Amino acid sequence: MKPAYWIARSQVINPDEYFEYVKRAGPASREFGAEILSRGGRFEILEGTLQFQRFVLVKYPSFDAAMDFYHSQAYREAAAFRLGGAGINELVIVEGEDSG
Image (cartoon, one colour):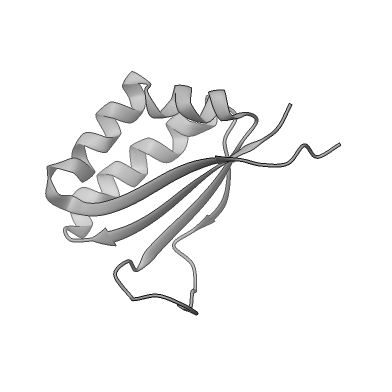
């Protein structure tokens, strides 16, 4: 089975509301086999513009697991905090290479 990666680039507008999103989405993602690889650490833009200041990389056991989490009730409830104006996101789920 090929893993999948959830790649998010975010611009935080309302830190308090955005934190509510993070506080709920992170733990809920683990129920779908997620492994958070990077979240909000040091970064440097090598090409492109500085539109986003927060980057998240999460590994899922499969593309379907990542999509199931995205469409889950738990994620939709968490995302409501962000979608209410707390931040702007770009989100991509990409299938990785088989580790075998």
